[in-house]
Length: 283
Image 1: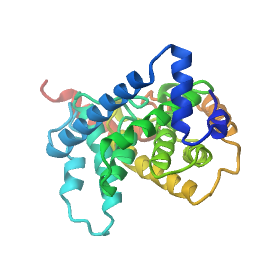
Image 2 (image 1 turned 180 degrees about the vertical axis):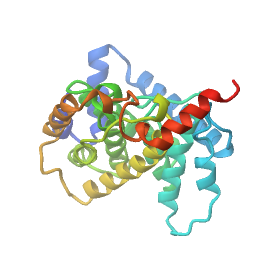
Image 3 (image 1 turned 90 degrees about the vertical axis):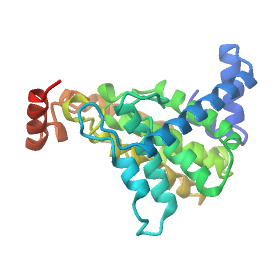
Image 4 (image 1 turned 30 degrees about the horizontal axis):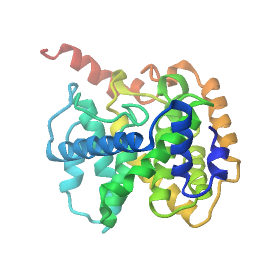
């Protein structure tokens, strides 16, 4: 399965992805849809838990960001923006507290899809059943990417991890809003091409800083990509070649920038000082 295959599929793209997946794996379509309903319910549960609490993560670096944003006045008068960001951070703070989340495609990027997809749906008053097939499409986009490159930060940098989740979310939101197969794939490609080069630099190796806020930013990034694609804007570079380019950048990226905590934000003086204090604190 490639992005070009999905692009050329009849609309909606999710129907083709579902049929192809069922043929490849001997699954029944309704069984796959039920799995997706279960995943949506898990995503929504993690959002609700994350918005209710300001309990700290194990390290104390995060835990209150989602609730703080959710409770804050909307001074920009941009409720969609605030909702998408808060939902994404709620999920990733649950992950940082070792709560139950849906890895989509990874735990470190778990907030991007629910932030974008459920955030847009709630903003528009759409029920969860309308999210089932867009989530099938998101899975298909993730599958197409993973067959050509890495989807983990440790292998390809954060471009591969949150870039993949943003691409999956962008395609899903595009289909949710009535986009064609072509528009969905170009939304994914636009999201991917604008994450190339992003390093993975978690402080102390914990999936907390900058991971929680990064999910908020890239959930918005996904919605922006969907908006561009729905307005008929396209990736200038063919979508599958965008994946290839990202894989090449990932291979050129030094190990210090691949989730090793040996570069970037993880090596700032403040981060290093925080970790020394953390080691001294009572267990």
